[in-house]
Image (cartoon, rainbow over all chains, first blue to last red; front, side):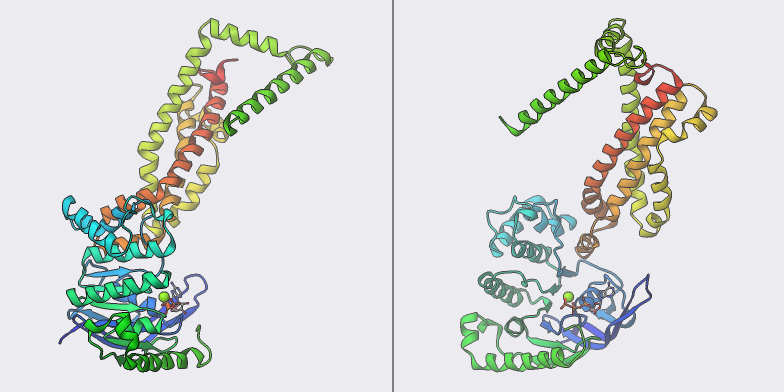
Length: 264
Length: 209
Ligand SMILES: Nc1ncnc2c1ncn2[C@@H]1O[C@H](COP(=O)(O)OP(=O)(O)OP(=O)(O)O)[C@@H](O)[C@H]1O
Ligand SMILES: [Mg+2]
């Protein structure tokens, strides 16, 4: 397998334009993500996960190192790399259906096909009947699901997801995780999925990448050798290998969080 | 009573009380009539102006000038503000300038305008259009700058070209601020119009005295 995404010696330093204060968010991060791989990323708060995703998305240029997608350096955002942002990023003046269809609208997909996609994805995220609602009429978790649907509908090759299920209730979260699993299996998209939830990271990832506390580097890459087809919560939670893997990742994360200093 | 009707009734009562107090003061205070004319005299003068057809034509004149300024604000002020707001550096550069002009009413420029443009229609039009235009430009610029960058980024990652970001994000995001700018511009503009008409003495509401 060739690397779909190659991150080479990536470093990023934020400079406050007023105080000249510098924050080194990432330092020497090297990572390969294979084509069709589902990579989950965990790490202490403030270790640079969002920064990494923004750099991959092409929204901020890194101060050191490089990022290659399909062997080409990333120079800006593109529709080959879809993003689900950590904050709410759906447009408040568009209804649910128009938000979900936005990517397709931009791609010039005809109206009939857009409507079909909307039907499919509102069903998938459990928001059928809410098509004509505006974001302010939805709960936080519902809005986040709309954002996920918008990115899925746009059908990018690479999906960069920043804690997309953080504000979703436990029950819906499980449904969404299983759906995402099915999508990953069916479409073989390359997915980078940031989460704080170790259980989620192990459940979803082909590999789980643990980042060290700021400045973020790869601390460990834990392969999760459980076939995707077996990843339903029922099967997964009864598998002792899952528990062991979860404990291992949790230990790695806690070392970073408790290791003193940092924002964790 | 609905809340709306309740408010209307309250205001009728307040207004009636104010007019009554005014009438009482004019009748009892030992002042010459030109100092505080009674409500009846003002009403008679109003009736006279209407009867001679002066007031209706003056109102029409003023409204025409106001309408012109409003159209100019929409057609020039809004696009100008949107355009200047699109780049942070351009916006930062123009911000102090626009803030200055939007806070100095055309009324303050009238002495100078009279010297430049004379006692005529041109002075009135310059004062009013200037007063309307700057709050409109300023608020349209602020509106664009206040759109959360994450919305712009979301569209960029969906592959949206520049014009699409303008149409789908910047304009709708700036709309509330544009509405504020128009409302302020027209409110300030109306006062500048009356002031200019009073000074210039040309036809219009301000000169109806
Ligand atoms: N625009 C910015 N300007 C300055 N510093 C920033 C900026 N964005 C992030 N940082 C800093 O960079 C570090 C990494 O931030 P980042 O948002 O990438 O962390 P994160 O891993 O996503 O955290 P969380 O898990 O809480 O979302 C933090 O210390 C943060 O304070
Ligand atoms: Mg983050």
